[in-house]
Length: 399
Image 1 (cartoon, rainbow, N blue to C red):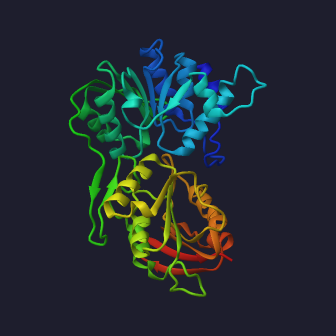
Image 2 (image 1 turned 60 degrees about the horizontal axis):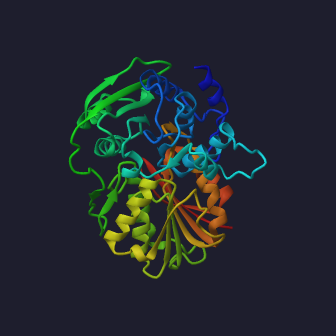
Image 3 (image 1 turned 90 degrees about the vertical axis):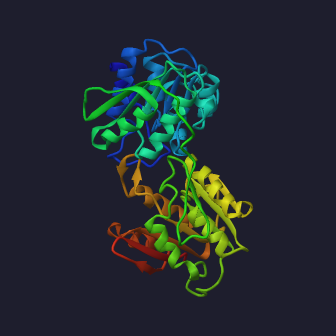
């Protein structure tokens, strides 16, 4: 479709992480829209839902190709929401260009789209769902259950992805909740699964809870929560050497009074810190809506919800300058389905502003990634705390 080619060319990932090899759209976006357009000639307002849009390609493509308005959108990452808002402003500018623009408000005022959590407000009465298949099967399970639970009985789901990331198990997950699931022909290394005929979805599959002998509390997770309801191996290694954290090189045993869990996931690090240092103020922050919701549950189950401030935010934007004595970081190694170290680099660089003088960054990462030179350059002197065959834990003291 020529209209899509022109639209996609104008999209940006901003303010999400950008690199020359990363785009704001992919072949799956185009194939999802073309497959839906062959079945849905025109979308009535409020009947079309978009889930998992990376940076706005699906939502704005649906507006352009299907003439859809009142599109309801769910994006787990905050940066995806912000990128959609900015792209909406570029592709569908305000009628009066002299008016100051606040991208998200402008788009919603023009009834282009509204953002929603993954709940009834998103899916009630939906007849068409455009879905970028998520990386994890747990996330797909929660999405499929939600569609079957709240969408119209005549709903059709067009779920696409890159072939290299797709498995037959995805068909099986959709098959738990829909009577008909079919796979379209692959094109440009992308494919679309079409699901219809939702059945009785049964009890909600999330949140889920897990336990670990190393933890004195249970761990909660939603489908898109990184690590699920478990203590992942990297966080386990970081926690094992946490006793001397926060004091810097001059006072290694000093107790930190202000702690940040950056990229909090299921909340394991934030809750562990709150229990280890009862007098400390703790901030947990993540751009993922599923992570923030899981951290709230984990903190509540451990009885420390009143001592942890939890924010859905980009990096450390919710933390004041030079606030933190200690930042705990187990960074992601991917953006969407693409493995890329730039995401972690961006988070590491953000730590310097938020660390107090002589404050400490505790970082765990896959050893082959060799983050140490970057940490030394951006933060300050580094010492190795722990290392095994897979992970390395570093402590860096802010100069």
